Length: 184
Image (cartoon, rainbow, N blue to C red; front, side, top):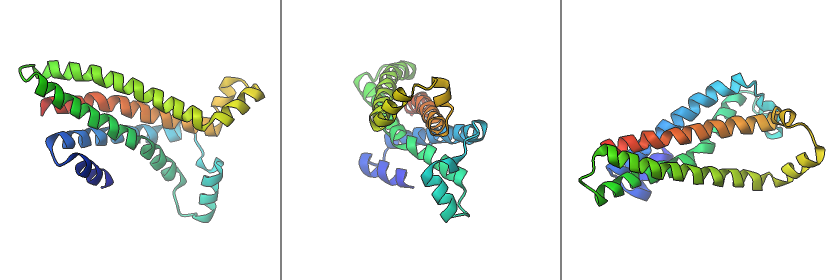
């Protein structure tokens, strides 16, 4: 509901905005499916985190795995929307600049833009995570634990699952949005 309001208020009611919204929802669906599979497959136990264990204690009827799933999905929504809006705009602008180009030509050109945008987005996410977790990264280098041991701990495993699920949804939203935009 928030996405509908935000997208249409920010970008206006149009086929382009609707295309971006459709791409965002497709990406959210992918992230949700991946997270729904990955949480039990990776044996994540959300109660390990201090906030989650406190939530489990104070609100016993709340599905903690559902909160973890929702958090994983929400973590990718803003970035998904950014990418899908950009892809829809890329297709519209390419089509306006070269109206005689075939839909396939517009699609392939917009996909090149999308690949660059995804790469830039991934860099941004990696640096944001590294900056936010700098003290943890320094502590890990001091402890000198094997990387495979560190990555299998609950906090790291949760972040890996969250990042992979959001990243895959993000990457797949580019061709989906670009394809729908090129067709419309």
